[in-house]
Image (cartoon, rainbow, N blue to C red; front, side, top):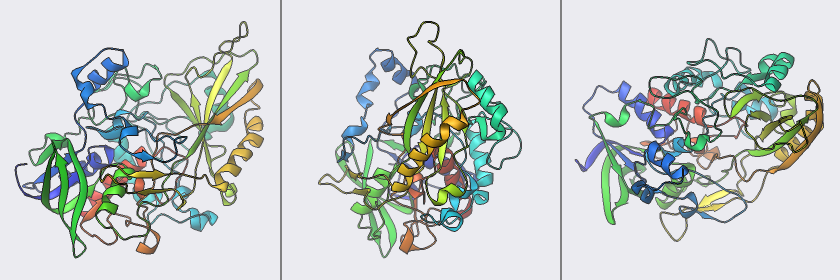
Length: 479
């Protein structure tokens, strides 16, 4: 380290931290000392791609399997994430739909769970900013309020998508995605390999290919292999950040601290630091996803240009959310199933049905005997969500009646959606959450806790765009 006292210490280099830093650097006048602590290392996309192709690379020593970093008490529930420069921007699939306005007011609109302490319209300008930074591809007409064009044009539709769009209009759209529909200055155009976790042509947005420049700023010092385990808090003020690097312990003074790791590690660090808020680590989870295969009669489903080719909103918003969960439909343009009947191998469409879930204190993150490894307890899905699954099975045949459907095959629920949400939920007061609407800890007022851990509820839409917009919002409003 260059100094022993910094103006800002940030933990993590994923989208939450990086977008926060992007806005912070645009607000200050320079001359700040900023330290970024990354648990992992820089593992370039090109080297990750070599491993996917069966080659070896010296960077493989930086592989950090998620299973080794947490103590997962429920082995049937998986929680994949990526550690290293860029965080989970290295393994995400680039899905960037916005939330719907009612996702932010579940209590006042439907009597379910709690309202967020901010609205869709508070985030709206930051949604645009995040979409620009990610060069999102998307359509002009959307079910959520949005004016103007996305930075990149939408991906081409499959034949099934075209039919459903004609039937349902803006309730069936080309999915907004951070998978480039054409080449940009820093990314290639998507070629629909359906291996988005490591895109073969680097079409998907990541922090590495983003060119946002925050880690090249002269004010920013970035340390790799820095495992944060405690915050030293005195009189409700974070004074020092404690971490280990190369077997040596360090304690760095700071004026402002930012937890920008994933919800498992943000919660673990807070709990290790003596956070007494009874909701810290509580109520984490994610959406429930399941695959439906649509067998088609005398219709070959061709076309399309990316993995998640479209989103359907027919089961998403409405008064049914008073009784059961919203469902977002993803049209997957990938070979989940190729039919074996002669002449029908492409007579199939594949949909992912993604259902919102409710925070439950039975699902919690706790400390373990190892200060670096959080213990993960996930035990239940809400009845609210399971009821929505049954409603979907009842309604989906009618929704798809515009297609020549032979059969619907419902697969078992997926082991994960690749999302970790909750644990440091957002609220207007401490009795109902851990952070305020600016993602500042209710008790420790010089501490930001970023990311999807702050989500008050778990709508069905993918979380990365919203958590990125929240980081931009927080830094803009607080500096």
